[in-house]
Amino acid sequence: MGLFTNNKVQLFGVDVSSSAVKVMQLSRSGNKYKVEYYGVDALPANAVVEKNITEVDRVSASISNAVKRAGIKRKNAAIAVSGSAVITKTINMPSDLSEDEMEEQLSLDANQYIPYPIEEVSLDFNVLGPMENTPEMSHVLLACSRSENVDVCVEALEGAGLTPTIVDVESFAIEATYHEMKKQMDISDDEIVALFDIGATTTTLHIMYQGRGIYTRDQTFGGKQLTDEIMQRYGLSVEEAGLAKRQGGLPESYEAEVLQSFNNSLIQQISRALQFFFSATEFNNVDKIILAGGTSSIAGLDELTEQQIGVPVQIANPIMGFNLASRIDEIAISEDSPALMTVIGLAMRTFDHG
Image (cartoon, rainbow, N blue to C red; front, side, top):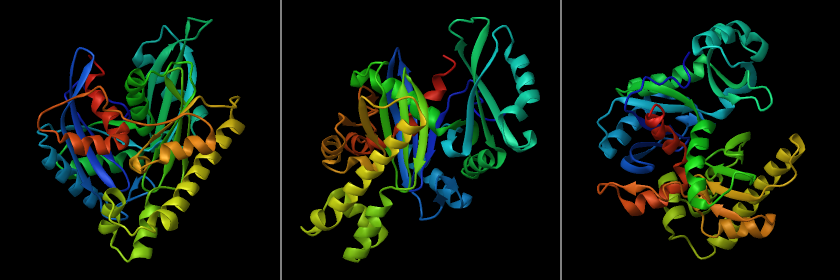
């Protein structure tokens, strides 16, 4: 069936974004997670475009580099396809069906739920639990992706000499991490939380409510716009601009000339995404905004967003509350933390069966 498959093996997470590959292996003692291994490798431009892997060999090479850098010895890996490549639907099925019977039933009924021929898709399901007033029926989450989206992820892992064990959905991995993170952030299940994952080229809004994702939407906007502007204005290469963006060293005029206008555009995108959410659902407010992804670490972005949108804003810190192995560079991983939502969720898959 493809998505979510878990052979109950020890695995690690591989997150391929449009700018970098991140790998992570976790251990767990009681309810406490520990980062055992972590590595990052920058991707060449256009190896991944709008969350789709376009140059498999380059992505495989980057995965290999990140694994070596991290010191990971395991071969079994979990990777994710982007939410925009996946169709999910919650359907109702009789509670007394076994998993095999459900699988058979879904294969027969799939054409009712998905717009592609069944032979072109990878299909999987997850039983969410019984319906409130009708316990003999269960809510079942159906997820399907065009097989080519799954195949390219599998190919990238195999090209790096790894065994693809789970192909997950990015939004599900983020949901798993959020579930852990909200305990540390003191967020209650009744709160409607807008989690913005601001990557290099795409900003994804995940609305979290009652502990799970209820709405997802991608917008083409991200940190690359700021990097491009820095390159053009100050005559820097991609690498130099990326470094200057993170570590400073740009002229004093940078904030007023470049950063301010980028921040305003980003907040405009956040506001627009929320308006889309309100108009598409019965909700008309959110209680909290969490900013995640590499771009969220721009100094002062949280205060500015809170000021302009009028909702409390926090920066995601998913490794808060995690222990770190002595080999992990604490400063580097803390700086990367807002961008680790997906890779942590994937690394946690190793404990699904336990």
